[in-house]
Structures are given as structure tokens and as C-alpha cells.
Length: 401
Ligand code: PMP
Image (cartoon, rainbow, N blue to C red; front, top):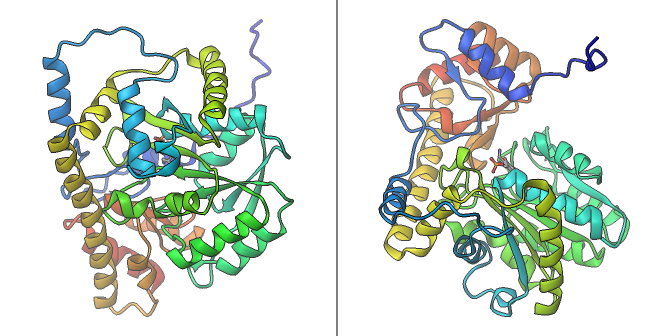
């Protein structure tokens, strides 16, 4: 007999299921807006020219393949911290930010979850927005934290439920952990305004809450990496000591290279050293040390001034193409005479648009129009091209009338 007869069949991953349905469809103009990966205007995966150049330089340098330290490639983590916190950041200059390289953003969230599970001094529950990236709940549950939710999306306005969010933060027990999407909220594409961030920071301070920023899209929201770091840097100025999960999957297109970082702002270099030591103790039995190739690419791009400038231009190009596709989709829907208000498509930012379409409408979109995306009505704008936007608009128009 097998040892595994009792293992129950688990449900398939929601997004991978969409890709499978898409692959089976024989429609020549089928559209896949499920996956959160950038595509060029021909709908093809995009490797940034700055990444190609960085890779060539690395090959030319004939580097060895020795292990990195437990916390990764130091030139990479130092530069990643500067990118997020800003070169003038006080805690960075004062040497009180602990940072470790991670297996992309997911790994950063998981190391963060594990650290908080072990050391957070108050209730080990983390609040995530409703809705949030589908993996947040699983990552934190598997880290041993309890997962709770706060209000975020208002389906009537297809916008932020700011009052609900603030009320929920105010109602949390003192010293709660709160996950905040630093920019380009996934799945809604709806971010608080700068004024709203200020009120959120005040409410968090009043409650003595701990902010955990997830920044998977720095540069992707506005096209400007500094602008997209507003919330994180503002919280720092206000005296919060947040922790941060960074991903270079989207803004460098390094998806499969798994490049990320987890950092915590502490109150002193002594505290930082202690936190660092405990992060190492967490990482060592998990995967010993992280892979070097992707981190070397990111490090080259962040540390070489010419390459850095080129990369910032490429980030802006990607963000701009997405903004253009949003405008085109809205314009085409209006041209067709749609009576729905589609202004949220252009007011939302980042890789995704939350269309406001319901589950049944999304199912019809797939069945009748061969347009695939998640059932919550989220579409990946990065999958829209000048070649498919008209067909997409007429498909959405056909379903929504
Ligand atoms: N956080 C959010 C909000 C995301 O959308 C993603 C990617 N979809 C991640 C984290 C992590 O992605 P990765 O592990 O590929 O960096």
C-alpha cells in the first residue's frame, strides 16, 4: 500500500487554471489577461535591455559561483535599500535598517512572516486588505500568523473605501500588524492619495500599529520609483518603524530569477545587529542562502550610474505603455456607446485594472469572447496591446451592454 492514499486532491491555483483554459481555446484572437507579467505591444514577454546589458557584463567578468552569505549579495541589498528608502533616508544613514536578500517578493513576505511569528511582541495577527493579493493570506497563515482583514475596496464606487479602511484601523487592538500595499494595489489598482496616506499614518500611529509594506511594483505605478515610494518614506518621516518586502520581478522583469529583499527599520545599529542575527537563524535552515545570478543583475543595474539611468527610462516606458492601454480601452468602450462609467480604468494604476465586472460576466467573457482573466473582474492591463484593445473593448461591451 502507498503511504499517500490519504492525501486529498487540492484545488488548482486560480490563475494557473486560467492559463490552462486559455491554452485549450482555439480562437485565433484569444486574449489572456490573467497573468501579472508585463508584455510588450506585440503581447510578448519582455526582457529589459538594461537587464541584457547587465547580464553581458556579468558574463564578461567571469565571476565564480561561490555561495553568497546567508543574507545574500551585499552590493545588491545595499542598493535595494537605497532604492526603497531613498538615499537621504535617516534610518539608512544611521545604519539601523536590517536587510536580507530573499526569493523575490513572496520570499520576502515569508521571511517577514516568520520573523514576526517568532518575535513580534503583541498579538500574532496580521491584517490584510479586502481584497488583497491572493497569496498574502496563505503566506502569513503558513508563517504561523493569524490573518484578519480590513476594508479596502468599495464595489459601488469601484474605488477606495477610505472611511471603512480608517474605521477598521481605528478599531484594531492596540499594536496590531497591518499589511499595506506600498503602491499599485493588487488586485484593485486603487491606491490611497497622498492626503489619505497621511491620515492612514496618523491612525496607525494612534493605535501603535506596526506597518508591513509590500512593495512589488515600485516604478510600475507612476513610472517614477521615488514617487511610488511615497507612502513608505512618509511613514518613516512620521517616525514609524516599518518592515518591507521588495520584489524586482516586475520593475526589472526578473520574474523567474526570484530577486527580492526583506528589511526592517530598527531603532539603533545595536538593535539592527540583533535583528540581523535572528534573520540569519531563520534563513539558514530554510534555504541556507539565496541564489546569486539575479541579485548580481539587479546589483549591476542599481549600482552602475549609466545602466541605472537606462533602467529608470525602461521602467517609465513600461508604466507609460500600461497607462496608454488604459486610456485606449476606456476610449474604445465609450466609442462603442457603452452606458457604464469606465473612468476607474484610467484612475486606477499599476499592472491591474479592476473592471467592476462580476463573476458571471467574467465567465461569459471567457466562454463567448475567448477573453480570459480572474473571476473577480481583474484584468492585467500589461496584456493589452494596440492590436487587441479594440477586440477587448467590443467583447466587454458585448457582455455589459
Ligand atoms: N506582492 C504582491 C502584491 C504581488 O502582486 C506579487 C506578485 N504578483 C508579489 C508580492 C510577489 O511576487 P514575486 O514573488 O514574484 O516577487
